[in-house]
Image (tube, rainbow, N blue to C red):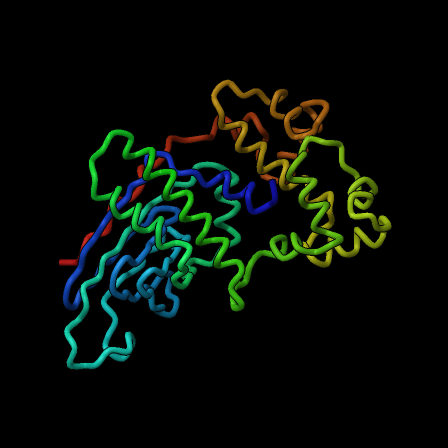
Length: 298
């Protein structure tokens, strides 16, 4: 699995709230407090979205937006000038499908920390079939509905984020760009495929088939930190996720992320996350319920 796949694995819908909203005329929807991550798709019409004090962006039919903040955001009917319509034309009906995530795991939060508060992806023909399935499932009341919607939301989110990363004007994280590098890419894949393996700079350079010095220099330039520092940070992110599982012990988690004993692991965890593994596990709180479907103001 690659770095993006690993991070998306930490963003998994479980009882996610889906909403279908049909709006007419001049309208506005204000979400005073969002979920940790909200996916919004325009099934019909056009919407204007504003989040986190940023510039408003147009969401056209078939397009999607991901709001990566709990701060308020607003959806509204665009003006004629903003939508390109004639001032004499009545406002078109707009149908929105929304899905809300709460991100309790460390892996999911790591992904969100690397994204802007709002990202918008234009319509894609590849998404049309799944959008139609999502719309029909939201409107239905069939056995297994919640499970099906959760998996549809995961699929749609993964495709939306991947498409955004590949937009010319996107600003993906350094590690995402590095995945395609012929020197650094193989090492990143190796670290994510086998995080518990006793990697060294020399063994990672061997994966890339370059000298140790060249590999270390290229990795630091592209990823923004030395290879072993990146590996340690990723291991501690995985460890935080594992510590949240029922019955997890510090010793067991240490072995799962590549440490032979709990002492070295505890030192690394505290250095990276500012708290001992046992203290982190004790601090884990209950999951806060996700925000509900969008409702028009007034």
